[in-house]
Picture 1 (tube, protein in one colour):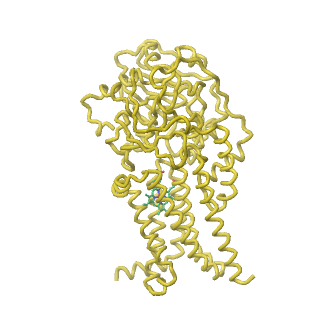
Picture 2 (picture 1 turned 90 degrees about the vertical axis):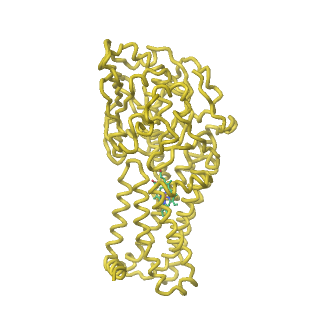
Picture 3 (picture 1 turned 120 degrees about the vertical axis):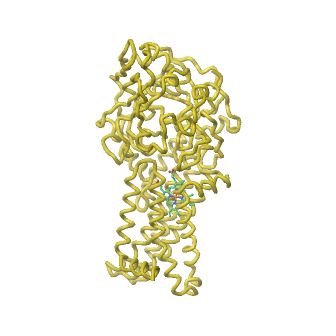
Amino acid sequence: MTSSTKVFFLKVIIHLGALLPLANLYFLAFGDGLGADPVEVVIHFTGIGALNLLLITLSISPLAKIFKQGYLLQTRRVLGLYAYTYALFHVLNFLSFEVQFDGALFISEVIERPYITVGMVAFLLLTALAITSISKLKRKMGKSWQRLHNFNYLIALLVTVHFYWSVKSELTSPLFYLAIVLLLLLFRVKKIKRLLLSLFT
Amino acid sequence: MLINIPKKFDLNESHVTDEPIYHERRRLLKQMGFLGAGALMSSAIANNAKAGFFSDDEAPFQTRTLTYSKDPFNQTLIKTPEKKVISHNNFYEFGSKKDQPAELAQSFKVEPWQLKISGECDHPITLDYDDLTKLFPLEERIYRLRCVEAWSMVIPWIGFSLASLLKKVAPNSRANYVAFETLYDPKQMPGQANRRLGGGIKYPYVEGLRIDEAMNPLTLMSVGLYGKTLPPQNGAPIRLVVPWKYGFKSIKSIVGIKLVEHKPSTTWKKLAPKEYGFYANVNPNHDHPRWSQASERRITSGGLFTRNRIATLPFNGYSEEVADLYRGMNLSKHF
Ligand code: HEM
């Protein structure tokens, strides 16, 4: 199999793997099939889904390096865009089903609740990354594109903090995610050092 | 006792989902969730799917019909469908996710049961399983239940006033508070055995009321709902219901009630004293540090698109009955 067929099949799997659960979720939600509180289910499902996809996106380049499978890098964009799609649905779920378009409540929640403030910052950064993933923009931006997309790591950290702060008492899952984010950062120690140096010099 | 009904919220009985349809959808969800999402997403749905796969053959807990007098005042309140009341539970002893108690509590044994009432009183007693439903005439009470997480239900409980039970043991003059305790049995309650499942709270779960709160006629010892004995996920065989306080005050599967002189410690307050107080009165003007308490989502029938956000009322709408208990108190300080 050539690399380009491998990429093709991988992308098919990614499209199906991302879209089917989402379609299934809303299909069931429409018909009151998600248990007693569908609002909680859709918020949690899309939130965790976004975080999972974000972490999968970030693990692609270490994996490609370790297993010497350069073509894997070509799946990063579609994975990242699905991470954004899930995040978008997550925020829209909150807006339309949790606060039910009460704009004042939405704004006061974003300002007053630290975990939502952090989520909002992560979401705005993700939005910037999603928009600049358009090829034309990417070419235009040159080097600054990479700089902007390094925010991915910050986003992953912010989302983990958002998750940690959102739970009432069960801390195992957010801590598990934190461990994964730190592991991913470990693969990038050199890059991060360079980044930090360039910031402060 | 006349309880005001907030009129903001109008849905009618035609919204009630047929039970078989509801069941069928749940089943479908479990299957599809398992196939579709299992690989990529670890989530509530995938959990449902797994639990469903392995527990379908487990015999469900058997409830039985109770004889009781109907609630004379609140029959017009739109109730939360029974199916939702018994499948959406915060009962961390059986798992901290809402659907876990219904899944993991089915083999819970409530017979024999002993409920010991002791402490600062003249006639301490211990009630056996049969006493719970036979000692006092049972009444239906249709109450709003407001969870601290900002969702709410309307539930037809069956039970008797805590006051009648307390009168029986004759509290003495040192009985300033009442302390409650849930069963501690890690063999039966997987959340007590496993920290991750149990949400990291300390067991046994303990709660408390001031004696005048405990004696208020609204305060109910519940042994049933929707005409039958309680299923385990709702706190079988006997639980407290304090409708003007956040749900976590209404402690489940009680084995001990103790009259005490000093304010007892309570589970959620121990865990996070800045977020949960001893009083925990429903108060739209005092936010939880992490979310607003000004409004709530009322869970009835209807799915995702039901417009069900309503204003939260002080004391959950029971001001007339209970506001006097707190006269002169700063409710932002004593939250
Ligand atoms: C304005 C932006 C955001 C808002 C308003 C928001 C809101 C919420 C809410 C209300 C919860 C549920 C908390 C609870 O159960 O009480 C939550 C949980 C969560 N959110 Fe967000 N969020 C935002 C951004 C994000 C982003 C960008 C991501 C990921 C890329 C994310 C990932 C998560 C995760 C993983 C959880 C935990 C889910 C769970 O407990 O199962 N959130 N968020």
